[in-house]
Image (cartoon, rainbow, N blue to C red):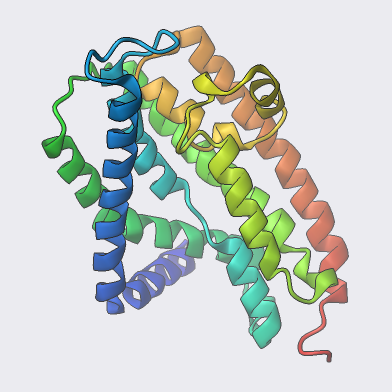
Length: 264
């Protein structure tokens, strides 16, 4: 436990050095939320009539909370895994006493914490002050949302680690990050909620883990799900965690013996 805290502290200090990057990141995160809100305002029109049973106020709240959820569940483990195999640092990381996967997860969580505190929270707070909306936050919804976000973080990490492990066989998997970004943007509901998906895409999203990273936690927060539906979401997230964890364990155990560093 002391070692984990030490890694968290070191990683946090490393990220705090590049403050300018996070200032720029905060500005872009704010502009991204503003873009989404104005886009939905334009689609709803001046009268603001409901679309598909979803009111404009709910969409504004969804856009802001989805921006926060997307930021806190984000991970760069696919890129990090690709880089550490290419530059050879994976050889040292494999010798860590806490295990390579746990080390990568701690790094990912640390990066999320720093990015959330210094990037996402200020941008979300600014967006909340800029746009007039009302939201009814129930304690049970907030608790369920927090539990769902925590599992969303794990799902996103395991999924990215699973496909990032392909670098062991492909030698360079940078192109998978682009593919992953497209899939995540489309199916996670970060930009367009699953409510508005056509029938085919909506049905397909039920068999993919992406909607359980952003859409489902956000939908719980904005109170569009009953307690039973929210409990079912948490259950599906747990199922996806077990599936992905099993797949990651299998792939990593088979692949770690095949790791080649710079052809050696």
